[in-house]
Image 1: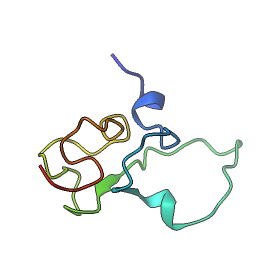
Image 2: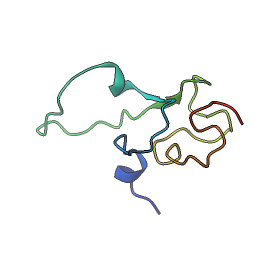
Image 3: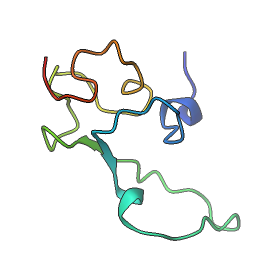
Image 4: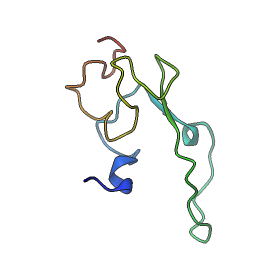
Length: 76
């Protein structure tokens, strides 16, 4: 089973360019003194939903494979 850090890794080199998440829209350095929140919400730019055009969950781990039909295009 994949751990949470790997599942939500937004630094993956093959991350789909259509994946969006809240941190993309503000600049704030991470404060190591403040515990991470569980405010992890991702969405697809095409569906504006947590499900991609292929009906699968939109999370970085699932959106890093160019073999996913909708990867980068929004088409299935």
